[in-house]
Amino acid sequence: MIPDSEFAYELLVCRYAELAWRPDGEPRPAIVSRQLGTKRRRWDTVVIEVDPDAFATRRAFGDGPLDSDLLHVVRHAPAEWAWYRDALPDPGYPWRYVRESIHRAAARDLVETRKRRNRIELRRIRPYPDWIDRIVAIENKPDLDRSAANALVDQLEHDVETALADEVWLATESTGDRVEPALLRSMPVEAGILTTSFGAGGSERADDRREDTVGVDADVTADAAAVDWLPSDLTPADPNARDPETITQRLEIAERAYGKGWRSYHDTMRPDCRHFELRRAGRALVPHCVAKDRCPTARECAGSCPSFTPEPPAWRTNGWPIEGGPGKGIRALLDRRRERVRDRIEPADGDED
Ligand code: SF4
Image 1: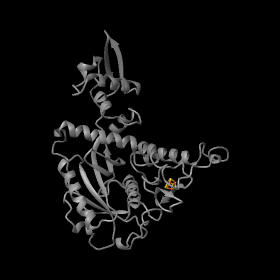
Image 2: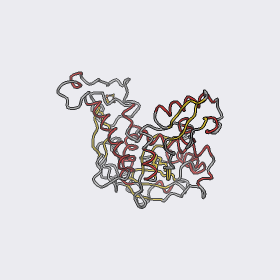
Image 3: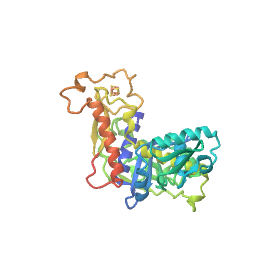
Image 4: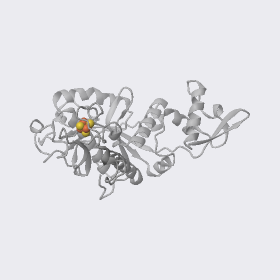
C-alpha cells in the first residue's frame, strides 16, 4: 500500500477509535489524535482515555493546548498569592522565561497575577486536574508485509521499554487469512493487534488490494475491527512512581492531543483548492482530491502541488451558502467535529462524522 493510503488508513483508524474505544471491552471516554509523541518516537494514532469529571475541569482551562512552559506555571500555581519564585519549582533555565510564561498564562486566564513591592505574584484560578487515565499508542500498518513488520519491531520494543504509553497496539487491515500474518511475525508480545476491515469487502488479500482500497470505498463503523491479540498493561504498579520527565512528557502529549484532535490535517492541507473534497467512508469523512481521484497525502496536498487551483473568487462571495467559500466551510466543519467530541467525550449511538 502506498503512503497516501497509509494516511487515509490513519484517519480511518482515528475515526474508528473515536467511535469504538475500547475494542476489547467496555467503552471508555477518550480523545483521539494523531502524529504525536516525543523527539525520539512519534505515534500514528494516540488515544487518551480520560477521567470525565477531571476532563470537565481541564476544559475550563480553555480549548487551546498548554505547552510545557504553561504547564509548569499552571500545575504549580499556588492557591494563595505568592511570589512566583517561591511558588514554582526551579525550572532549570533562567527565571525570565518563567516570567514570560506567567504573563502568557495570565493573558489566557489560566492564573491570576499582581505586582507587590515590584515582585510578580501569582495564584491559581483552579487546580490543574489529573485528567489523563491512560495513554494508548497505535501504530498503523494497513499492509503489513515482512519488511514493515521488521521495522515495527524496534519501534514497538522501544514503546514497551519506555512505558511512556500505558498500552501499545498495532492496527493492520485484515487479509482474510485464518491466522493474521502479524501474529506470525516477531512482534513484541506486549503489543496488541487490532485487525481492521475497512477495505471494500474487507476480506480480500493484501496482495490483491488496489492502492486506493482504503479511501472513499472504505467503510468505518464501530465494529469494523477485531482484537487478534490483547496488549499488556505497561502502566507501572505505582503510576506516581514514574520519573518527573516521563510525567511531563505524558502531560504534553495529552495536551497536544486535546488541542489538536485528529482532524487538524486541514491546517496543513489545502481545503481551499477547488479539487479538495471530503468524502464519506462509512461513518468517517476523508479528504479526497478530485484531480488525483484519491485521498491525497498531507504532504502532497500543499500550495506546491502542481494541480493546486485556488477556489474561484465567486465561490467565496455571493451564492455560496458558507461565508468564505467551501475551503473555509470544510475547516469550520472539521473544527466543529472536534468540539463535538470534546462536548460528548463518549461516542454515542448516532454519532456521525
Ligand atoms: S490538486 Fe493538489 S492541492 Fe488540490 S486538493 Fe488535490 S492534492 Fe490538494
